[in-house]
Image 1: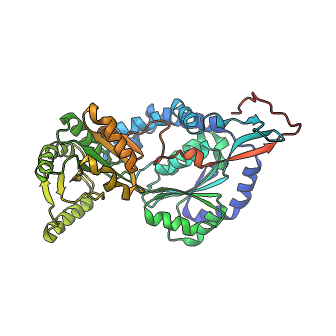
Image 2: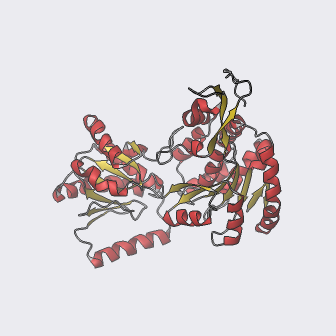
Image 3: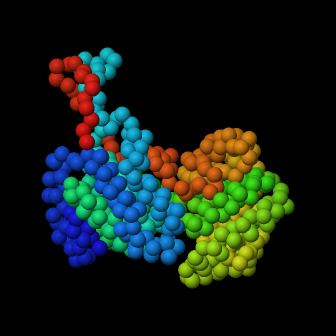
Length: 438
């Protein structure tokens, strides 16, 4: 499906939209943008309708398919509330949202400094989170940009539905949202979209990032939200309630998010202590897995095949702790790696003295660490994880809980989608107190 100026079209409409797009974009660039409060109000209205049950059919289908949990739906509604989005604007842009007039020290004239949108963003979204493409567009809107969205193959129409509803609720956003269902292999169309963009925003793994860099003209900025890995770090005697919270996180996210726990590093150098931890954690994880919808048959077959292959190849030192539906694999190495997902995690030894030297080589891939320890150890272990390159430290249960104003991989998205414009003021005098626009 294609969304163009509020109208949903079939794939055959892509050519006509692409042909008219340069003129439409020029017209929009010349007009006064609606402002961030317009976007906030539209998102808040949509979130309120979801909360009141207007989209229960869609929500129930997502929950039944194991795509999202009821808790994640509630978190998304809160995330797009007026209060949360205003907090996001204040956190990410602060007072710089508003023009300021000043005379810098030693300058012979006064200037006005303000933030302006980059212009046109091309979002190349990943498909590991159902609403991620629409969320990426909302961030572009908050910074005042026109947004071209290239849907991921596995989107399923949810992003088009959400963005079409957003435009219906606030028609002023109509010329700021275009959605294309273009295959990544259609290099001709992708090249045309990239040529229209001032910035390419890419979500995905290393290959997706490399493809976006190849696609971008030299003058076009590329903002990369690349593939990240997250893990838990636990003391051997971590409280059972902390382990239960981590197990819920693993099962509810299916280990498919960048913030999902792939495995557990245990603060020990002893193999016996590692195995004892696995024996404690497995029944807790298995209990959560049995209470959740099972993986799709194809996913379960892949997991079984990979575990069988690992046993045949005799992975050095690896010991599988199998449950009815979940598994924990104790490994002798300390490498950070992907898990088999869907309730199958690894556990590895990593004494706290080795956190920085062992994890620093992965600094470009580190995102969230779920910390399971006594309060007395929290500050010291957090500092070590921070120095290793981790950008977010949470309890195990809260690794994937979205909160207003949080950074993406250690950076604020809205700042990356805006630029600073400085204009000399006639008369040489700075005037303060300019009221912000809506």
